[in-house]
Image (cartoon, rainbow, N blue to C red):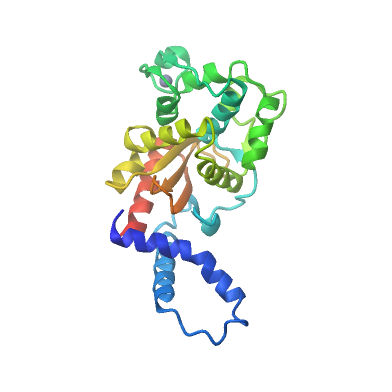
Length: 291
Ligand SMILES: [Zn+2]
């Protein structure tokens, strides 16, 4: 992590304590100004202002969280509490529900590309859960959700604060295909913060490793390339568009940065593109915040 980035990250981290300082202002009114804190706050403000100033494209929606305090720092996302389809962003949570029912053993699978129902024409070949998350292989997740029912996800969705799928829902809807399972973007962002918080729990390590791989060479490579040499944890998704001026699909990205002890979580939606392309936009945003 670069020195500036560290400062920005620490500044973002500082926001919550600054808020609490404001809340406690009456009790601490005689306290001398904390120059270090003031400087950090300026960095936090500058990161927030960059998002505000440079990314006003109405096709981009975003939520920016302090990953350590789970505080929402900045957002421009109309109706972010309203559940919408979020595509493959659900996959890690579906995988975890599967793992809980299978002694935390994830399957391996051979993807034959389009022929086995993948979004990719050419085969991904043999995959474990790490690679399946990294490349968001639909063939792998078709197999994983084939015998899964919505009711089996209830424990997981409750634990991670996600809107649950209908109990009778089965198959590909549970890997985020189509629009049957809608989740609030705010809940999804917090779900990923919770996933990182539970990084030591059974079944979670593989999923976070897959997200790190996604940023390096998977569907989230747009973030990884922009942030080099800093690593990130990324998951992408593509889902039916819910904007008033409808496009065939919207792209979604969740990025936790840096991968080792994330300081921020950025979740974005880009109108009319696939998730991998939205990752390029997310990478650009994160890079500007880091400059
Ligand atoms: Zn595949």
